[in-house]
Image (cartoon, rainbow, N blue to C red; front, side, top):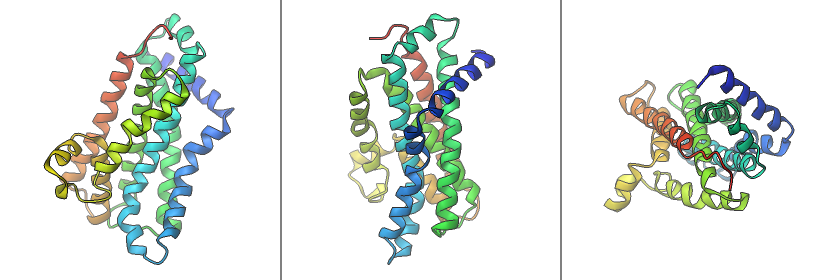
Length: 245
């Protein structure tokens, strides 16, 4: 990997995204719209919004970044752009890191907007620091980016890329502890939830929601989310093919 090639790849991806306003709107605005809708769904019960709003502040960016990243990367594959790039003196690590950097920059904007909206416009009440909330939201968005880059290697069309969402995202959504405490699940499901990164994303948000200081559990949760994102990026580089199908 070389820094100049990674930055050049990131700049190219950002230039392409600049001409795709629908993808930008999906990444940046949809989580904010969903949070706004959620707030007024629970308008008569603000405590309910406080209890689940923090968790969804991390889940919404993860889902949208997964969807957009997987489709955008797949377009590079099916159009032949990826094959041409890999014919150049450009390493797989440079390519994956460039994509991650470009989408990560958008993830920063997305997470900042969603967190600011939830805290200062929608009145989300958290005990911990807003900066910690932003940190977890950003890590969740980066995890979604990494997962999207990874699964795009196994899809042959945009339709197949979308089909990966029920397989990759929905099980994590059901088992992450959003709907019921993980300790109350069947032992097999609880054990499965313990190895899914979204579970730690939700736990990290809940730590900020309940504790004014940084706890050991918060450090563990954020470390697992960050480590999972890094691991998936490495796997994405390993599965990157030099020939498109």
